[in-house]
Image (tube, rainbow, N blue to C red; front, top):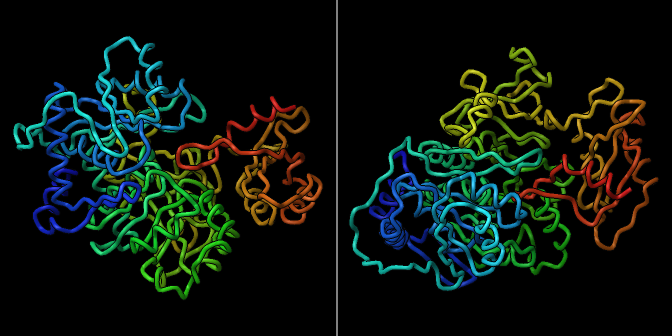
Length: 510
């Protein structure tokens, strides 16, 4: 099987009464048979709207049952789904809607006022359809309920057009085919040993590759299930795990910190509570996880936190640490799974063990191309290897360590400084909730090291205290010369801190 549709049909035929999707906010469950029926309805509705095979269909909505059904239904019926970042600014949303050639956009009531002014500035007709979080999809024409004239996708057909966060310019649209999505789903399933008995708790938005692939596509591939609340809530996370007997969840470091900060308020005896006995691991991706935070998670919640690596352009997971009892190395994103990974130098030659270079990837899960951007597509590939722009190294056991982004590297007085090295130190301080180190222009050294931090509620630390804390760990040369205290740090849809936006914020604050 190599399309989303084939997996839906297969599971409906073999275990159709099993639950695939649980929507706790509206107290609904959808079996695999119900999933198939809803997908058929979406196909008929798209036919009625007059959109052809390969047409781009966008959505602007939060997570939830109906958003998930739409996401799968569009792809399963041979059209291309275009998720819109609900927290993006109007400039980025307008760019994506215009650039993607979307013919239809589904919008929830919450975001309709955000969407409509953008459509006035786009010089082509885009059909607007309502998506009600309580009642579902509202069609403008009658749906018969009978299967007819279905458009069946092929493995090589585009399925998903997902735009990168655009931290250094307009976002690029990565085109992922059905075979790439299926391959990416298999990487999650195999890497985490998922079966039809596993149930994911999805707390990341499905307009981002992590939520879309890891906790929607992977359970579909394995024949498992997913619990899909509308939004992440630290207060309800463990209660949902307990109520629905979830076995795993994919999170990001920011969420991990929120959960840790309120751990002493939870009504659970972690490690000994029967209500949580099925929860076997958490999964961290999308941003670096400081080793100190990983240790705190495992000491507090008594379950493994598995560090992984995934990208929009690779349909999610490309590397993962193995589950216990195999070795999990803190600070590493694990070993390649389902594809090949290597580290190369500036000439393209393979780097020696523990030598830092650029990380490149090859596999069936890679994007087909960047939409309407041949220049970016050509620049992204070296032969058939995808150039990630991430810097890192491999150790003797094949574990991959990321040291930072190629564009984020700080060069102070001719010496390369990886921002993550300083970030890891900052996160060890009890008073710091979030941290990001960045280079700013400096007349004497070319660049100078500074750090932006968010203090935990109820904690205090001074700039001098943080400077001395860093100097003790990495020395004066690498330590931040200024500490900027902020209420929040800019983030992408996955929770990843957008480091390259910080210099502008700093300049405007002075």
